[in-house]
Length: 229
Image (cartoon, rainbow, N blue to C red):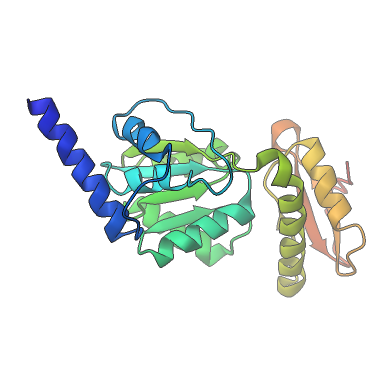
């Protein structure tokens, strides 16, 4: 009987958040099963078509679980869209990635450190940084999500778009802009995306898993002359 009462309470809370925050009265097909598993703390793999509402399957539980939700995605452009949409709904979401300015990253890190961020969106590379993990460990994490939407089909387009935006940032600031450590294939995509750019040059630097691309304003160059790969 107690279990039934608890389950009913969870379902009531889901309905309240669904309508009150997201503006929906009913879940779509497949969402209820995924959300139920997530709320129960069960490992869950959700494979759903584009537009079927995968994001809601973690965003809604994130507002009910005790602790923050960490969303890991390789697609920074998609991450920004999701973060902006959640903020418009009044959800305290932050993103941490290489496309942000220093002040934006500092504010996101402050929100993580004081526990006010309910949802933290970041890249796989950030999770390899000890300082970032230390900040994340200051408050409990209730849910970790790997969002692989469009990973294969959209990754190269997203990388090329990111490269162009970071190149504009390098030109505007007149300072080199590093791109997160990435695979050799991804580095080649960034180099190709900016090969014809009139305002910047690119070089790779670092070793092994930490090798990355640095975008330099024209006329500047790496001290070590890392070169392209």
